[in-house]
Amino acid sequence: MRLFTYFLTFFLIFLQTNAKELRIDFSNEGMKIFKKRGFGKKTIYTNAKDEKGWFLRAEADGTATGLGMEIDKDLLKEMPFLNITFKIEKDFDSIDQKTKDGHDWAARIMVGHGKKIGSKLVSLAHSSFLKEGYLQQSPWTKGSRDYVISNDKSGEWHTRKINVKELLEKTHGISFTNFIAIFSDSNNSKQKIIAYYRDIYFSSE
View 1 (cartoon, rainbow, N blue to C red):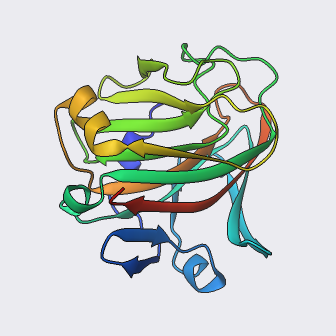
View 2: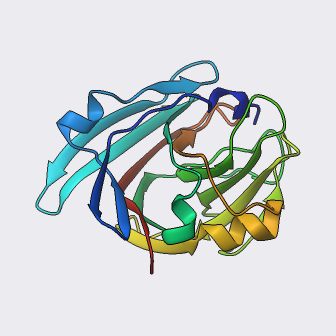
């Protein structure tokens, strides 16, 4: 999907809990500075809180919008792992995510070298149709890779930890990311999906 030129100046508030962990803040204070960028109609992002803390809800209905932030390019030297917890309330009925017409993702986190021309990106994605570990070049953009980190169909919260430094080295020959973005989209398939994100943070181990 042609969305990669939109990730130059995104902002999320973040909280550094210690020298080896950097967390995204989904609280009301954090939500005040969220900026959205996308393609066409906008995905709806709302935050809420339960007994485990703050989370983000994403609802896409033929829409494509992301939330993101710029980060220090040296971050992965100390904290190469990205931890992601999410759940899928409503997934796609049936799409072929290997094609342009089906290239939508209920939940994904994007990292890499975002720039106007020549971006090198990886989408850490949930898919109900592709196996965990599946890796492909985006059918829309030469400089983007889709990497399936979850095939969980339970509808419950689940967590994945990825060494994004190693993944970026493998896919693009770079060892840094200058941004992180949350992206739920359905603008190609025109279906409705609902996903949730929480506890997104970089860590040293």
